[in-house]
Image (cartoon, rainbow, N blue to C red; front, top):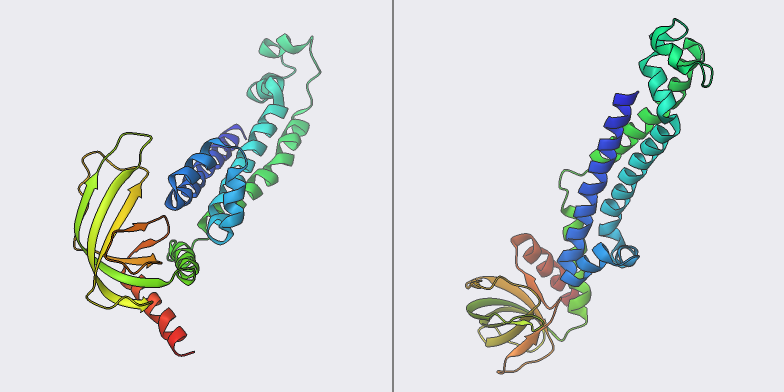
Amino acid sequence: MIVLGYILLAVGFMGCLYWQVRFLVLAYNQSLWWCFGCLFVPFVDWFFLFLNFKVAVKPFGLSLLGLLVAGLVATWRGSCGPHDMTRSYNKRGAGKGGVADLWRAGPSWPALPDRERSAMVHLPRMITSLILALGLIGCRSADPDRSYRAWLFDNFRREAAAHKHVLLVCIYESRFEWKPLPSYHHLDCKGIVVRSYKGTWGVGERIALHHELESAPKEWQPPVGYLEYLLVDEHSAEPIGVDVGEDWEYTPEFGRRVAQLYARESNR
């Protein structure tokens, strides 16, 4: 029972730690401040869970489950007490002198069947908790990031509905300027509109963008030649400020979903 208790304790803590890290990664993907808030400020993680329930409920719930399993095991081991643990180690000497004589001034030792029965009462509970924890952790789809990608696209769709222009842009020039804290780092880009899903921008038009970044390596060299989606409210030759949630990385799957979204809207 001691070995089983330690195994359950380790499984609970490792499960809690793993899923808590997954939860913090989701918060970091939203913003660095969300990550710090969930890590250091009480109840911010609950607020983040409420705002992003569909994607955050699994890592949040499983981290709580791991903590619950570890807590139950620790509570059970604590309820046994040092006297019970010593009895289990010396049960062969009970009532036969030797080490057992040291306990004569203390509580009387139960008979061997009673001690075994006391331990067996907790065994089904521990096994059930272990099966439940491993079962829930193992209940993962063949593609564990599928729900996350669906959540991202839902956010994109909401943001796109709130902007006047939705563009697919190829970035051909980037210039990064690192600044010490508390200032934001500056990233200026130039690109060509590859496709216009919404608004007055035309294919082939050039667009200038200005980003302000919270964190970036000092020697970072921004890439060029990549595609990204832009959600903007201006049609101007001047640099357009890009805020959080207004630029989205292009992937073939994401591109298919965006094309399907605006094909359905154009058919309405």
